[in-house]
Figure 1 (tube, rainbow, N blue to C red):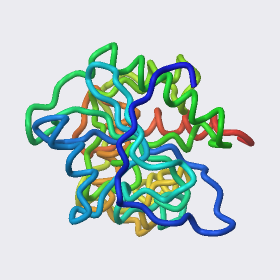
Figure 2: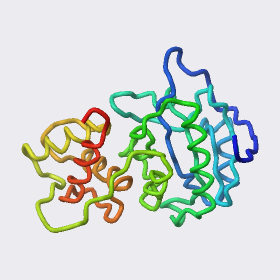
Figure 3: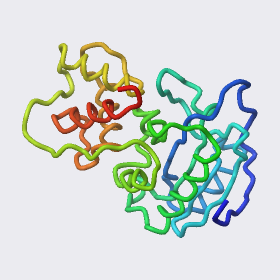
Figure 4: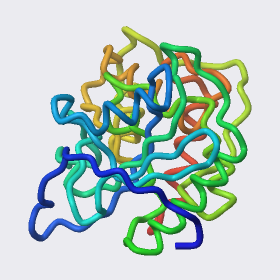
Amino acid sequence: MSFSVDLRESPNHDARLAGVSVDILLLHYTGMQTADAALDRLCDPSAKVSCHWFVDEDGRVTQLVAEDRRAWHAGVSCWAGETDINARSIGVEIVNPGHEFGYRDFPDIQIDAVIALCRDVLGRHAIAPQRVLAHSDVAPERKQDPGERFPWARLHVAGIGHWVAPAPISDGKVIGPGDSGEDVAALQRDLAGYGYPVAVTGTCDAGTSSVVTAFQRHFRPARVDGVADASTRDTLARLIAALPGH
């Protein structure tokens, strides 16, 4: 490891499932008013939450749970049909007060540390770029983190994660709440094919809008509104086209 790491053991972990390999790197923000409060909660046995890695705003990295253990960070979640995300992931908590307490940009020194940590993790585990995910990707109806201010493009330039330049926002047909038909079904199929937990019903319900919002937070952050405009759909199509085997 090419950077220094503090150690603080969280009691909140258990054994990984036999035969399940780590194949997801899941990034969160802490969403609490202070880093100390977040760290204390992640180490509180009554809270029953934890993560493997914790990155402070000044770039300090702390390990809370060994990577060969199952940390409790994803909660109720799903990706590509898998529902025990904790069993197959490494969880990284990135200090930021989040949308509830004054969401702000992530400092450069913090993102530099996140990049170094992610590279280190990816060097130990066979995690495909498209499985470096946001908490909101795997739990779109519950979570917003790490949110639209997180610099996914910067991570991609550093060799981390899947990314294409978002299509410019323009006028044109949109798919929004209450819409139905084949266009909605096609959108749902594409989102589900990428991995998002969405049912193909042909109706743009609240769950579909939540998934579109999560997609925008990660891949088209210029406008996060849950409405699948041409920019959102084009960005999704180009991400799918850039997947291995397409």
